[in-house]
Amino acid sequence: MTSDDELLRSLLTGRPESEPQTDRILDAALRSFETYGPRRTTMDDVARESGLGRATIYRRFPTKGDLVTGVLLREARRFFAELDEAVAALPTLEERLVEGFAETLRISREQRLMTRLMVVEPELFLPHATLKAGPLLAAARGYLAGRLRTAQRAGAAPPHVDPEVVAEILIRLTQSLMLTPDGHIPLDDEGARDFARRYLLPIIRDSAG
Image (tube, helix red, strand yellow):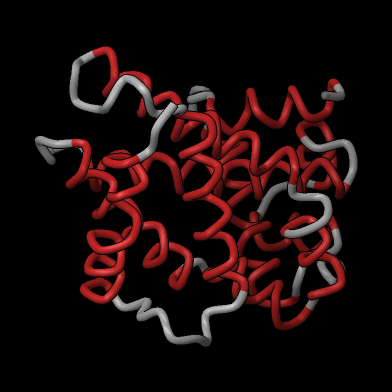
């Protein structure tokens, strides 16, 4: 893994302290990206949208690439935090897996930036969601595998299950459904829960080491 990949994983799974002015810049950039797409958004646009000077923007984000990365990483952290909150009160691993699957699809449907990028800049978005998605896949796999290991230590998941393999199967399936939602599998909340109970829970119940 390259140092850039390691940085991405660290940022995705970390919980850095919020800084008001940086958040103001990222909020402005997110609004602009959702409206125009990152390619058509300039640093001047972000400065105007945030009400801050160009120098302030550049001190925190020296290039537009840094700003795009900052927005995407914060959205990824928000996704993981929202997912954690949605399943935190559920008592069993199976319930958390079912609800987590449905919640992941729901959050993805409502993620305006991803939806916008797929429409206005697919040539920018799709490589990073497919051929270049390795670092993001690794970060998501690490997130889910870590929770499966915690469940195993607590006796709530079968000890013979390989957390990394199970996590990758679930993530790759979810990635496919997010990128190509049209199909036979129902993606509404109740349909996703029913699908998870029927077809995903056996992965954990029946996997043999």
